[in-house]
Image (cartoon, rainbow, N blue to C red; front, side, top):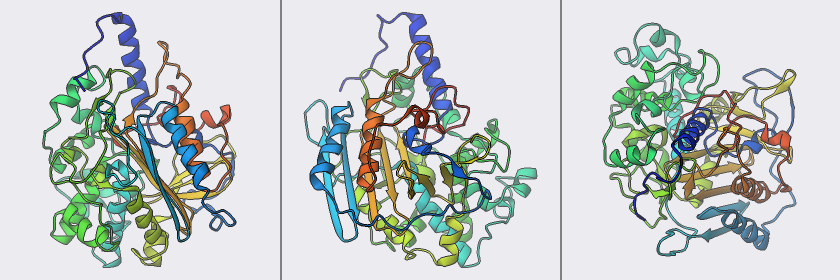
Length: 456
């Protein structure tokens, strides 16, 4: 695919409005690739901010309808997504499928077993590693981060921000991603291209985040990748090992995952699709960024995996095989992940590197989503890990906006949401207007006030 060039025929004023719309959408991003409609399945009885919502047992009475899964996955491609692939599990029964194109130029087809950049699903792995150190007594969840990293996080922040606050995004520390890519809103294609092989060290990323204006006060949820870069540096401090090496040895290998890794170079080592970034239409045509130095994401979002591996990982985690009861209980202690109306509780709540989400079927599911330049991933499981879905796709920030910033209809998001809901055993349906007005994500209205990271 040839590099995208600014469209000379587009009036300058119109392009400026498009850039403003993209900027507003990026700055409103709080839930990376999770469709907005998944975040408002209806009001939940209000309870303590740290209480775990009551989740029902695994979906009983549902077996895998392979024909329905194939058609529902194919609907994502028919809606405009270049390609998608997925793994679904119910007990011992599994289904793997793919739809659409891995390469839009050659027509190469998407395949179910492809490796994929999983973005912020990396955070679950990092949180597991930190909780292992908590179990060993080397880290205290409610100890200030300044105890471990006094030179990097000095002063009041070092004394007031705890390890738990980093892991549940209530630290009041800003995201580093926009400062790390200056000019990305105005000219995203050129900026992303120029940084393709750039190396960034984690200390530099943390300093960018610490210097940026906080998106929310300490104690209130505001998603920031800086938190998980700090978590990686904490791991290095207490283990004496490189964080990515520690996570590989003690989380990935412990789970027996064969196709999950931190990339050692800008290139993925196994079969994979090209990964196309549109930046809300500012990069036209969408450009492949599957080759990229992921040091800018590190322990917050650099990992590569497969959908089968992700289901294996979350099943083992939720089944208590990677953490003891205390560690898993701490991980599943949550805070509201979006604003609510009076008398309502959030339909999405964030724990320590994992969230729980109430889907329209009324059930709560556990997992995470991830989004980097060109690659989106979403993995959800029932609380017992019996019913699971993981899906990856290769066109990001595909949403479009009117010149005044209003979002246009989003058939891709609708199809993605319906596929995930159906794969989990729920009853898929077209999202209502109420669902679309819920907590922010990439499909949210531009008026959404929540903060973001370009990495999710």
